[in-house]
Image (cartoon, rainbow, N blue to C red; front, side, top):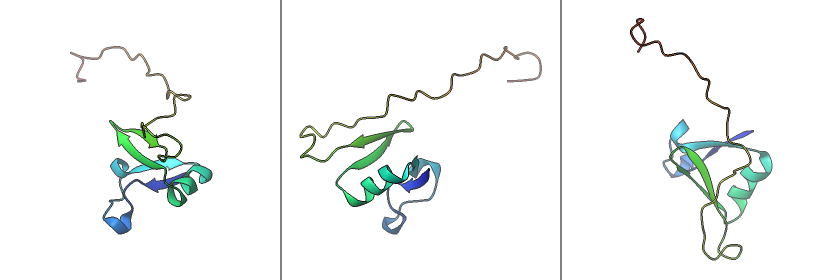
Amino acid sequence: CEAHHIIPWQHGGETNINNAALLCSRHHSLLHHTDWSMQLIQGTPFFTAPYLLDPSETPRRNTYHHGLPRPNYPTLRGQGWN
């Protein structure tokens, strides 16, 4: 994985999790050298293809990976935990 600044640091983009995503080398290069773009929507990376590939320029996301399931921890309220 390679860290990608959504707004490049040389254009004022900060180096933090709200302005970054981890990408494989191929897709990181694609964003830097083509007209593909990327944005975070509620913390999820969405990618927009160039007009010639998608005239609607609809943001899309990777739906193959859905993240890890959330653990089902027991409720600890009233036991000193909030």
